[in-house]
Image 1 (cartoon, rainbow, N blue to C red):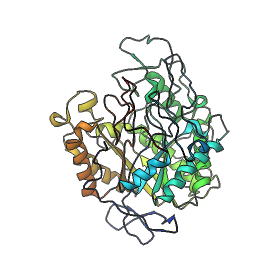
Image 2: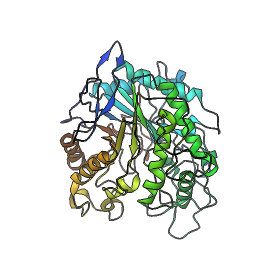
Image 3: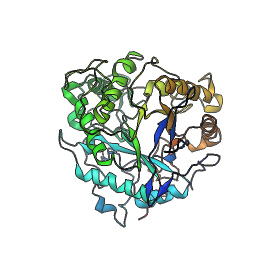
Length: 454
């Protein structure tokens, strides 16, 4: 059974001639929030889902196997005219041609495509042409259906390489469930001996994750430079392809041991500016040495890509997602005109009423401003950095669709923003699959309707 997601949503169709989609940009009307537009200046609301089949999820058969190889093949030839078998060993089914056809049939005009740094740069300085070809394959499928693609540099809890096989030594800690962690490659994951165990049932409340994230923000061993080089590797391939609407630079960033608003204003947003400097050549930041800690005013050298055609989506960070209001100051970020604030709207999903108080959404005591709180405040955030606004991720347990999903769609209509729904298909959720189709029941290893087709 498929979930009724698009009912009531305004689905726009991109302009396309002979398979080429119109280039998108951000329009900046005086006195109003900027918006994504086509070449004629008409608003384009991107609506789609987020397929997880190209994320480098952990897929080990037991906790002692900390570094299993990627479960699904990354060679595009494995998907030509067929689809690899689905499995309950990994959270999601593989992404295949039929998935894109199904998305188009639902009326979606875009997809947010999560990809993994660990697969793009599996060894330091060595980029995977095979994985890049696999990404290009999916872009080609989307182009054939008249759908835009937003690349999502995905991560959750920094990396699937943060685990350890030994039991938790600290009272109150639980063993890390690696199936929910992904992102950075092993060589870019510095945990410095901190124990990998989860507190409060939250994967990010893990000392190893906190240390690894902190090391990234302070550019330990130049890993931030390598990340920027990876984004450049990706953009060089797709900068002239209008099917690719743009790039979500870093999914759901987490501050590590740092605290808001200093983390956002001194580390996260300056990192975004450096990526934009490197890829577009706009030179907003100051010249600084690279491969060391770079203070907030520092920019980044032009890497020669000069991509001025595509959008950059800026995730506001997990603290903002949890609180449902801004956790940073209103500071300018970049002069590049095609910026989009990527709001992750999880009211009653990952807000304190749910993750700490365990309240049902219909009895929740937070947030006090309801669903409107996160959207109205996000509009102000977007205006403060001269950016458009899009809900680049939202979703919920299907049993709460009449309440959560319905209200999220109402807010999106009222604020005239597009969305990307998490997730397209999922095998095993926390309790239920959040996907748009019934998933595998992992307790019985019974495959239901998430089984992909060739």
